Image 1 (spheres, one colour):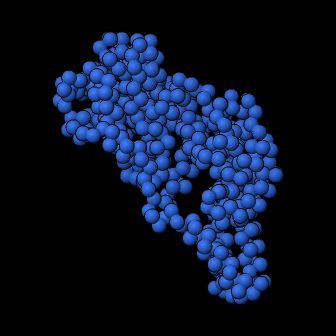
Image 2: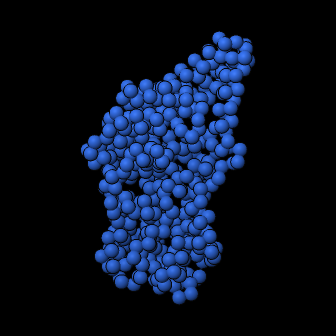
Image 3: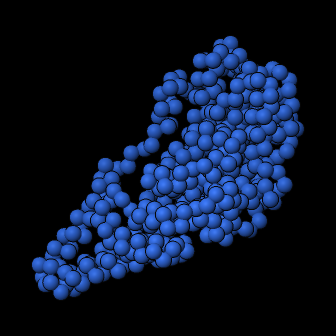
Length: 406
């Protein structure tokens, strides 16, 4: 592949055209908070030079643009059962960050993508979604950071996004180079090395592979690709150096969720075994010690899970359900206290139609997360799960403290 137009500044937007075999790919690097980027997209599509328009969007983000009310139709109970509550909460948090940007800057981030979709559709051109699914990217980020940083990462994401503080000049500059997803994580991460590979370089490879695959399979002679300016250099280098030969294999590799260390997946069961062994030793020494251990286990584990539900302003019966469930579910890693508590809340206080209709606007404020019943259920799931997890370790240490002192 050769470059036939060097990167140049057109209305502040860098653009390059690459040629390989009989195909051409023009890549426009955009700023996601710039009206100039949206105008440039409109100008390029209007030339009629392109067979297809590729955008830095995955199917989920595309659906959020073309059907912003899709979240209002989700089955919350199924979301909880399938373990997707954390992903939905993260998606809402990212939407809140985007809303905060729109309010401060007067330009909705991603306006150039909306323009591309609309103008390409009007021109009857295919819209190619070349970015990796956001859920896959979030999971690969999760598995790329040390386990002790994972809660910090996602709690930091939530805390930094729902704050009402103004967006800093550094964050704005980052948005001019990257996208909402990158800025939301990088603004609070102290160690960006853990995030760079799954968040940026892998997506450069993924989008490059998708572009090559689409051109070859559909015989698009000239494709316009619209990506964040921060991705332009990486995609350009990959395409020029022909770093990707087998696109199907590369896409499959980048779509895979990394396996945890073989021993790590057995860790929850190992903890359960240690707790049960502790109970056995306690009762072997004396029935009083064994009973004391069980009381510690129930009140510490159940108490912290109930506290999490209480902080989320759950119904009193939901708080009781979290308290009763946590000591039992903590001995069965296949089900969590958060799942039980969230399910109880759904049946006790089922979200109303207006909760779903206000979901996006309420998720943009910290108060809204507690006011809206949908987001409150997600908080109940997250906070009671965290409380139960903390209770497992604290109660476990308490049990072995009794054994060592007895």
